Amino acid sequence: MADEELSVRVDSWIWSVRLTKTRSMAGAACRAGHVKVNDERAKPAQVVREGDVVRVYHDGRERVVTVRKLIRKRVGAEIAAECYRDDSPPPPPRAEAAALGIRDRGTGRPTKRDRREMERLRGV
Image 1 (cartoon, rainbow, N blue to C red):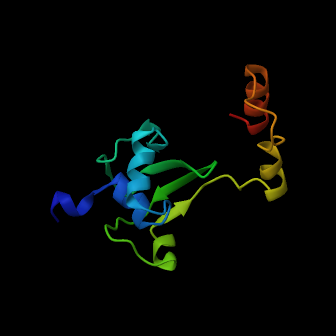
Image 2: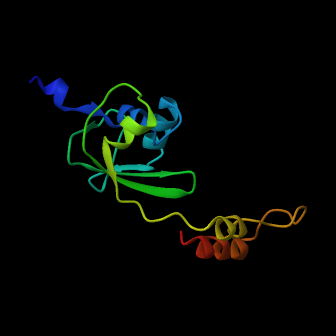
């Protein structure tokens, strides 16, 4: 097998297995530092191989997946689920997640103290 068949770009792979909605969102997440491969920050063109651990912080939640199979094209959800093993922590309950970031309308910009308290509640 040629080396190009053994590896795929990380932005293409996380889009192909439906961790992000669009490929441009996957690339933007990589550039923003929201994607890590084997606990190292990943650029969009970084190569991902079978057995790598990919961490994606997307939509307020961290997804931790282990690469099982490499694919280049976007596929259906059932096939995509076979391409990785999901080791993500369970998502927070909806009521708890919604209550964390709600501020009263018209209260203005949060102070530094308010912001730090909101971050503490979110666990950031």
